[in-house]
Amino acid sequence: MIEKLREIINNSDNIVFFGGAGVSTESNIPDFRSDTGLYTTADESKHSPEYMLSHTCFVRNTDDFYRYYKSKMIFPNAKPNKAHLALAELEKLGKLKAVITQNIDGLHQLAGSKNVLELHGSVHRNNCTKCHKFFPLEYIMESLSIPECDECGGIVKPDVVLYEEGLDSDVLSRSIDYIRNADVLIVGGTSLTVYPAAGLIEYYGGNKLVLINKSQTQYDNKATLAFNHSIGELLYKVTR
Image 1 (cartoon, rainbow, N blue to C red):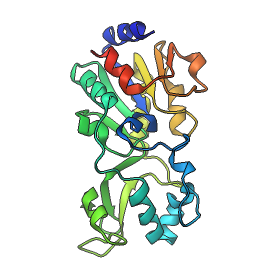
Image 2: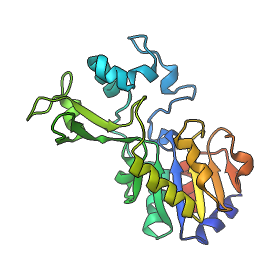
Image 3: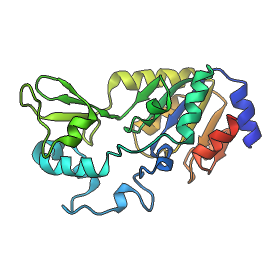
Image 4: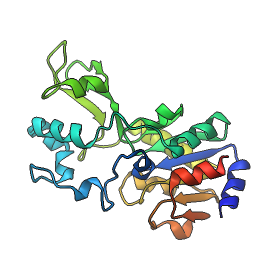
């Protein structure tokens, strides 16, 4: 099966990669639903992760939101792993046209990928809710409590999609276009259960669907190739 994947990649110059949290677990960033994921770890507030990362919590319990967000969602020392590096190399070779990611860690860009569509935003972009001034991640991390704009005093909000918020319509539309027009669609590190992002796979009309995930997904029987495997190791093997 690995040789078949290598053949598919070698013979295509219109590959799109769609990835989830499993792409970054090999960089020691926890996912959400595994045995060691974010949803299995208790928070001192006793609220669910869904609430702590919701728009409601950001508005009503802003202190709690930032305490949780900074301790659970930001990993400033994380480095790109073999999956990120392999995808960047495929883009450099002209084979990979886009990386569509549910992750907010910015590791694809750090690895060298240029065309990255971030469905859920990025921890590296933060904006004042009043005057919209931009702030880097360091500004959030260095704030002792709620980060406030140094010009107007407004609250600085991460450019990440919280629960109860919708995806960016432009990013979503561009992602659909890339998937719809792809020759090869590689989906990795996602259980394909969280919508609307999971529904993107339905827009692929080609015949070279590759799924790479440590556990089975509902789409495995529809895939050309399905691997229950480490994404980084597999992509590293087939791109070398």
